Amino acid sequence: MTLASAGPVIPNFGVHSSKCVVENRLFCGEWVSHNFSSVLWPALRQHVVLTLIAVSIGFVIAMALALAAHRYRAIERPTLLVTTFLYTIPSLALFELLVAPVGLNIFAAEIALVSYTLLILFRNILTGLREVPREVLDAAEGMGMSRRQALLRVELPLAAPAIVAGLRIAVVTIIALATIVYTIYPRGLGVPIHAALGEGPFKTELIAAGGLAVLLALAADALLVLAQRVLTPWTRARAS
Amino acid sequence: MKTADTAHTEGPSAFAKTGEHESKAAELELRHVSKRYPGQRSPAISDLSLTVPAGEVCVLVGPSGSGKTTAMRLINRMIPISGGDIALGGRSVLQRDARELRREIGYVIQQIGLFPHQTVAENIATVPGLLGWPKQRIAARVQELLELIGLDGDGIGGRYPAQLSGGQRQRVGVARALAADPPLMLMDEPFGAIDPINRARLQDEFLALQRKVKKTIVFVTHDIDEAIKMGDRIAILREGGRLAQYDTPREILTHPADEFVAQFVGADRGIKRLSLTTLAELKLIEPNGTRPSALRAPPQTSVRDALSMILTANGAPLAVVERDGNGGERVRGLLTLGLIERLLADEAAAR
Image (cartoon, rainbow over all chains, first blue to last red; front, side, top):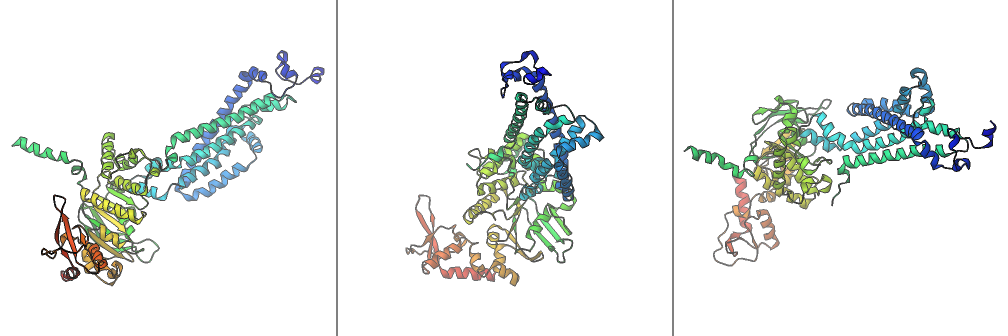
């Protein structure tokens, strides 16, 4: 107790206390390099996994719903109602609400994360499909494509820019949201961020973990932009 | 004997580019076709019967609401038929799988509807791809069609539709429709979105192309002048999809079936008729050695244009001149206003 009040409160640092830490500077690179493999790297990997699972499942569900709504208009309104409702539930509350029926586990975490992707993905996929020009579909039908062929060869490729735009928003949103998964399930970058909040004036862990979350979001976004450039070369083709 | 036979049958392969691949055409017959939309009192098409001989261009023309596009879309079953029958090459289209049928019918629409995410070559390859042709055959066919529409240079096959001009897009649309060598082509106002100057050029190009490929074509337009120019036969439809007259352009202009047709083709139908005849087809007045006026025109000029020239020159006779082999000119004969009057009168009398 006396020791704690005498100097900065630094967890897991013991004998390795460096000058930076002792002097309580804003950011200590040495702490980061020392704790990267044990604290930050595992948290980052967990964060990526949490995000990938959520966006993948969300994408599959949203795609199915959007294809159904594209074919049967009546499905659009109820789907929008439900996904908008899910989207508006405060995230902390949703995590806590899921604990009782599901438990303190990855399922509760993913159910919550997936529910936040649905509105964004559903709306973007459906918009993309609906914006395919009428005459292009008419030509596809007139040349003897089946509905399935028109969907796979014409509608989905032409909706790709809108779909990727939706994925970008969903991925960035989920990377941010996944930092509070720690409240019910101790995984992801939320764990070191939360731990850092208890470290008083020592800010290095908070900055490092938070910074990683931001970098992860930027990297994922850049990756999707790149994927779109490769997948949709025609969007950049203009009269020369 | 046998070797001679073999040599003979192998002969056509030398003409493959213009002959072998572009030879298919089928007769189209509409028999008492009707279309009634549920909840509508008057039918969109009523008792429409007409036959388009193989290799001819039939233009469906009429005011809006006359059901010309509907009639066209009944043929490839984009719109389900209510009554009657349609036969292509003697076979009812109603007994066929709709998608299989459509792959056998070229389809060109006003907005063209090229796939923006596919290159020109990929667009043209659409129907052959659906038919499961081997890759090499598709590539060869695409190349052949690019040459046919004059877009084989400059790597145009690898461009996207957004990189083409309106006229180029239109030609690619026609090439795409021709890709699987369909016996019938449906064209819905194919030049409707093109400016007048380029439209005339595309029409001429298309007529030249049709002389090569000789397809049976159903061509929809609202423009009677385009109908006269493009059609071997014209079907004039009136409100409710009733056939007012089905005849050659010359017959329709000379002997309109009723007041509606006469009004639709216009009060200037006599002049329009003159555009169907060229100076080469006329029995001209002998030049008689006298040196004619400065007014001269080549034999492929239409009588309509020649009349305009004569009127501009205050009624002076026009000399029809043709080039001889040595780059000089030879006067073939003279055209006068009196001769044009007689031409119109003779046509009106002949029936």
